[in-house]
Image 1 (cartoon, rainbow, N blue to C red):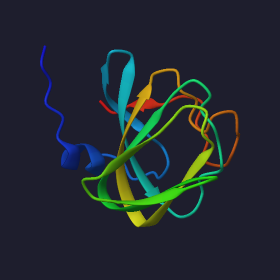
Image 2 (image 1 turned 120 degrees about the vertical axis):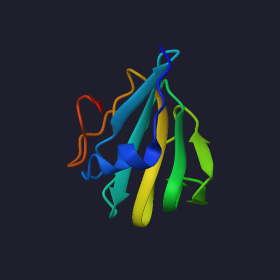
Image 3 (image 1 turned 180 degrees about the horizontal axis):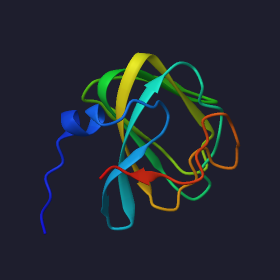
Image 4 (image 1 turned 90 degrees about the vertical axis):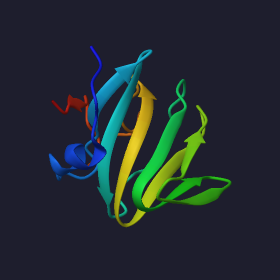
Length: 122
């Protein structure tokens, strides 16, 4: 069955920051929405998975140990597997993430924002 996902309505259903909500799954990948605010994401690595950050609203800095980019609404970047990274939102940011379903939230790093599993936004 086909399902329409409305981003505005979905984001309006939760307010927690750094708590990705699953809105769809395709080919073993979760499509997740997340609110971000404040500098709370630790340096971490996903050894076997790439990670895509797609900015819906706001501005997000994505840092690696060797580089950084600033993303605005409508832009995305992919952090390759095995690359240590962290993200820092400017004010409030709304993101869409694409990750394999088994991806650990903050890699092997445990932090205040780390979630052991992601919830579906029904």
